[in-house]
Length: 346
Image 1 (cartoon, rainbow, N blue to C red):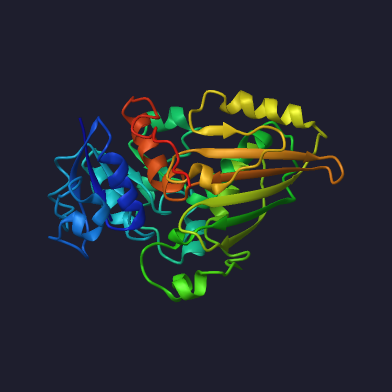
Image 2 (cartoon, rainbow, N blue to C red):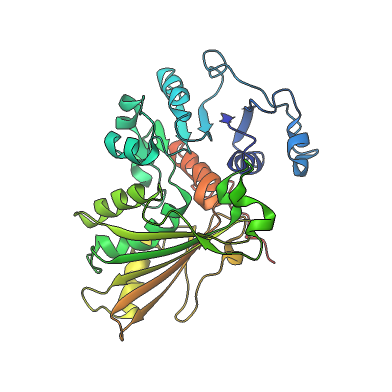
């Protein structure tokens, strides 16, 4: 059995990790860390876990309570993960970090976009970016995996093959992405009040969203040259899910069938990538509460653009599910282990 602990277990991502790992046949959860709910039964924090997970939340001591685990899932906000990751790496244990602290390789870029000093530079140098379908070999050998952000996952998976094959131009990619309210986390705020989210749709973080450098870093690696994107996220009044519509210039004037063949070459053996048929486009409900990424596309000869639509569940494939997928790779398990639940409909 893989013995795991979860830091930040009472956030939405922590709850998804608990849901998935509690049903994973190769995993034993050793602790559910929460400062806010220490000593409270987990099923009192989330009533859906009644008679399923009755462990008490505990505020762990980083010096003492990491000894009896094989892997730590760190689901803390950016800036707070660094101390915990340093400790677990020091103890020569494995870690999947779900914050942004180890995603961006340039310390200066991270500090500019996130506004905090990076205090774990040595660990950053060792971190492997955890986009499971692209870096599976590197993840399998890693001790520290940095789980991708939710928006980046929905964008990188559809764009990576086309940039790698130099099918699209790198200087005019436009991304229009929409996320459910759970992406804002569990902490109450003016922007996620029901009365202001319901029957409302708004763009935010235009030109300034913190996932931008992560997206550009990984797209630049795929393309072998600097990539700059126009990324506009939106908040949409639903609980969970991300839909990204991506517009990319068709540099080589390839056909619809040629693009589909490229995707098949890259993803036909990937269990969580589902390529849709011609004139069929993804919808968030089709991946709800699952680890799937659905991708549909249209090669538009009139504008000479390739239009790609992708959907994921932001809390699963965009966070906890991908973290479990990475854990599976790190321990030599089939990557779909514990993640085969079909999406919920309706």
